[in-house]
Length: 186
Image 1 (cartoon, rainbow, N blue to C red):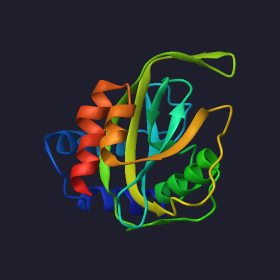
Image 2 (tube, rainbow, N blue to C red):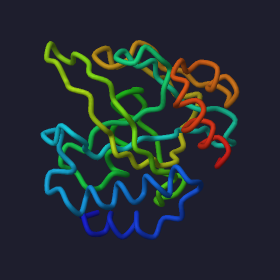
Image 3 (tube, rainbow, N blue to C red):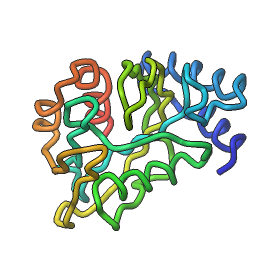
């Protein structure tokens, strides 16, 4: 998917709530007005892709214990120049959870978010606070497939019921505004 196709997909996406409506406009404007919107070199904001990974009957959600945020969270990562954000989400799930069989429930966008990232140290270098302009996809995997951690990013990979997922995350904003929304949309 090229940049214009992604812009079209975001443009036609129907926001679920006020947060998504507001963030949709922010994301569209950012992509249109920044040639490096898909690169971490843009230190103010850049595009990311997240995966809300469920099992076939949607009774379990795959999460990782994220080392930087010290919390159980969804999977995903930086676009790093890639405009096919579904491909980014799929790649990140495979890398972060060590699973090989994951597929989209739909190739359509599942949700949109503007996410704040506090300043932190990564690979020995300070990264300033910035925004992740995020596109989320609903993906499916087999909760019986073996998982493995990616030690430089996470220290746990596990499946949780939707209720457990909300309790496991220690990031109140994510629980209230992102994960609760994603569970409701399932």
